[in-house]
Length: 498
Image: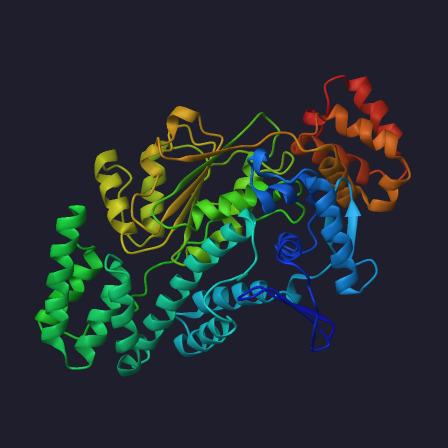
């Protein structure tokens, strides 16, 4: 059986079915930070912030020493030599994702989302099994620290969305009598969540409690108007009208689900903290806009694509993409994305609308296209990825449940409430790791000084590092010193090397 780790409840570790003693709470907090995700190098300074926050006045006298002590004790507790390793100013757990219940859970949820229209019974079984893997109500229960709290918030939001999806599948499968009481409880706990109320109204109607359903709708409409100044979402209004007319509402409408994300890169390094913060922002609900920007070659585009892939399970109604800038070391986005390239906001909006099932005419005015675009997103959870778009404003979603990731935009082009993350050069140890992944660890290990010089000549910028590493990898007879000489002769870095 080997090692297995549980995060969906109290943090536990088992070896061959026997639970291990993981020690004190702060020691468990270090383990949690190394497990999400396993196999990734976590710098010591990041572990310090994960445990005690960014305010150094709240740190203990020797935080680095305390981290080292926790790691030493974890090694003894886990009992496997070479499992928890120190490398380049940090630590890494050499484990596959499959031994952590969190990642098995997220894979099952993603499978259910993908199957909910084609095979709702199988989707329900997958989702119910995933939710059944939780132990208690809180992930990392009892684990202290800022990082554990961020993970708890993200997973609580994702779990709520999964519960709503499960109840929606129950109704689609005719299990309204089983779902109605649970939906009533959720509706009372979340009085402004329109999707919960939509499901509750439908369950009441199908249970023969139509008058109660319509009374609930009117109460919700008055509450939304009084508290938020809003009308109910069109999907909710349509459901109420169908119930009044005595029609049989269809729960799972087969709307198009665009999947336009460019391919992710397999070897992103050095951005763990930014990825965690980006996931927290995008999974927090509302309509977040996340901006990523930095100097040329910093890899903001690659990071944006990676983040979009990491959170796509939270946006099961599709992902839209517009851009066309190169990323990942000078390679253009692959896959023939339908909205890459020019044409202005109107052309991109028309493309988005067609992908969402609206036959929009690109010759229509921008205001009309924008209105139709925003209406098409209501009631959906769609992620919009924009890369190098000069005027992102018209393309940003406004419907709750949707989100946008914007790479390379000018600061003034984003909404005032957008969350901005700066993307800079890699740390030297991360630059080394990127070179080792592309060129090969053994080849890089033979010439540490030359490799360090290559990284410095590239300014520790991922795009330039990747181009240099690919040049070296393609020339088996070259050494790292040969690459340094080639770069020095050019005098302009590898940015123009194609």
